[in-house]
Length: 48
Image 1 (cartoon, rainbow, N blue to C red):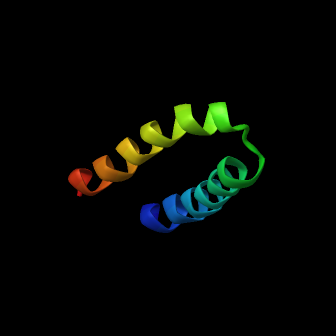
Image 2 (image 1 turned 90 degrees about the vertical axis):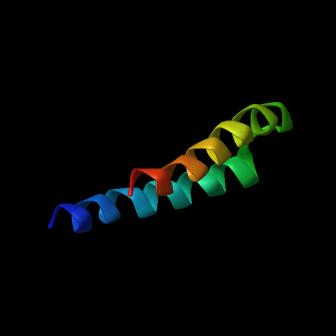
Image 3 (image 1 turned 180 degrees about the horizontal axis):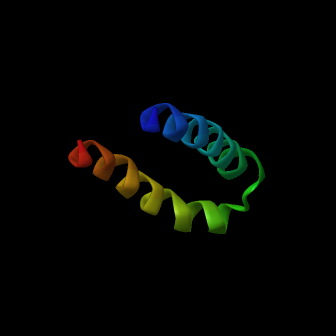
């Protein structure tokens, strides 16, 4: 049950943030945020 709730929150949040970053963010913001998001993406499998 907790995993289903986490998926319901994480999937839309991830899709919206990726869309915002790729389509609407200025290049300076994208250059600053992209390494941080890639760090989080690599860190999540370690939590399992």
